[in-house]
Length: 182
Image (cartoon, rainbow, N blue to C red):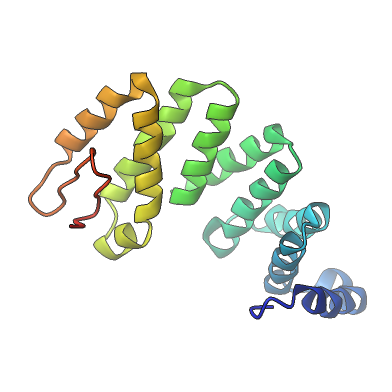
């Protein structure tokens, strides 16, 4: 599947599903769900992910629930996507989930709640280890852009930057620098 031969991967996984039925391990179900997603087969992916999150919502540290929410978004079911993001964010602080939830809220017209999600994303990353913050810095950049693009959020972004300003982790909100980048 890593080589982009998703059609072939789906054929193999579907044989496994047919042969093993409910005994198929969650790891295999997750892989077939990703293959289905790559082919735009959102409902098939949702079926497999639903079986995983129904028994273990925090499978792979919440990745299955994140993919589950994405499938709902792809199917234009924002209500179900929102519920999945909210469930995930109760127990995890995945920057991608926080960002995507904020965008979903913004799309729904909940501008203040969306801005709050972006501020939470930045605050959570600020408290994360350096390697993780560096790995997820693109979400910090996107959150900052989002906040700058919303007039009533600009002051909050500058206040957050000033509050968290330290010699080790300087944030230049005007130039999108984060995580000590130069």
